[in-house]
Image (cartoon, rainbow, N blue to C red; front, side, top):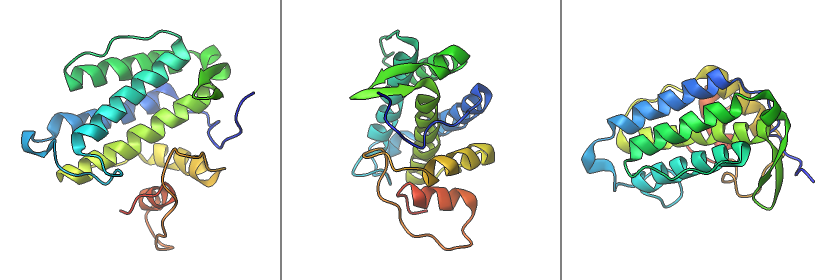
Length: 182
């Protein structure tokens, strides 16, 4: 049975690809002396957030495509490989509509694509904030993910919401819904 969530959002592969490129730009710009620094993501270092993101993207691609791949040793190569496989997997309308084994249940490919988008956007921000780099969240992605954040909470996916001012910009409001303090 599919777990009910607020994740079943129609996400265009082009939007995913654009967000993947935005986060890749952050990864490529991280100074060598910042990889072991702290991040806003739990108790993880910058390197641990990046590894979590790359491994997660690889898992999402494998869940939808049914094909696992070895992770390249270089982080940027691994990120490029995982995002390319995600774009390919999420570009198949039949795979988006189908249910796939995921965790202890099943989710549609569309739901997994939504998780991929949220992980990429939020962890891209985590990495940028931790390293002092700029991050301009894609406004279309923010709008879509706001629908996800306003839906039923998925246990363990993000921290509990934190308060934000009523006039907060859309991305700051989204981050608050997902447990981040901007």
